[in-house]
Image 1 (cartoon, one colour):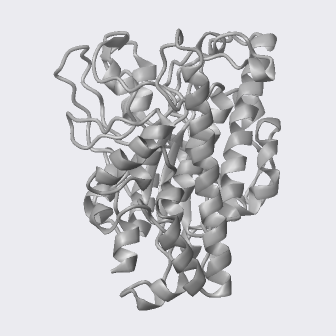
Image 2 (tube, one colour; image 1 turned 180 degrees about the horizontal axis):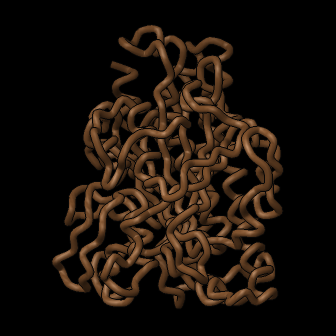
Length: 427
């Protein structure tokens, strides 16, 4: 009864006594995440040289050097349905819409949108009942479901990675406060309201019961609880600091909880995804770092020009250098996230051992708007089922959906096809 009461307020990491008492928990649960990189890359600076295990990380991917044994670079995959195929311009909208569906988006700016079910939602439909949240969708952009965004395509295509059905996206959450409440709020909502009224943190609200659990836990589990609660506390304090700052500048009409800087926003979302996986609150997540076509600037690294604009580089050396800076910036944030997973212990391993994390874009060269030989990284060990530490080359124009099908198979999801898939990959 005590554990049930506590779990209704805050999710907990799986401790050894609970694991031993649970049925069918011989192996750690497997997690799957997709992280979308907008506007393609500077291909000459992004793709490594060499092959197999004998490859050298490129300048753009150098931040991942310490993690090369935990990932593989994948080349040769394509999104055929992101190509025009008779529909004319609109590559940015199609890149986002096709990335996880492998389907051709109906070209419309109206309400009659249609695409296909995304790979992550196939997982959510079959495995979602085993976790509190079937899936977790994140973004740094405000979600949109309507409007004309890219050459006659609805904004719904460009601002959503996940699709529950052919006509219904699964809108991502932008505000870290909303994500935090979804992860740690009480199931019936009453605890959320009471805590907001009393202006107490989630941890303070359950502190008495928390202390009882810590006193009963073993030494190893006590340390694990301390680490976990510290991580949750840090995230909540970071969000509260952002909210406090926003309230002090009322003329900025932005949602409470969204950090002041883009880097802090990305990191907060990655940290929330980490604790969502750590607590087994969900086993599948997507993160739209920014929608394709995004014109975000990056003053923190000296890039004050709009990303989408400079992605049309026309082989200009200065613009290519700026794109490479952005590519390296994103790689560094991805490396920080992977380190977080690697340093989060679980059973005899860590979260990175028990995860499959896809990082990449639906466009290769932003100037060409091409959708073949996509920049893709697959990180994690998939509970020992993935071959890491290598550059893996697929046959040219292999459907990216073959990668989805391969990962879904490891998740235990029964799927004969995903979009235009033709088979599974030997990854």
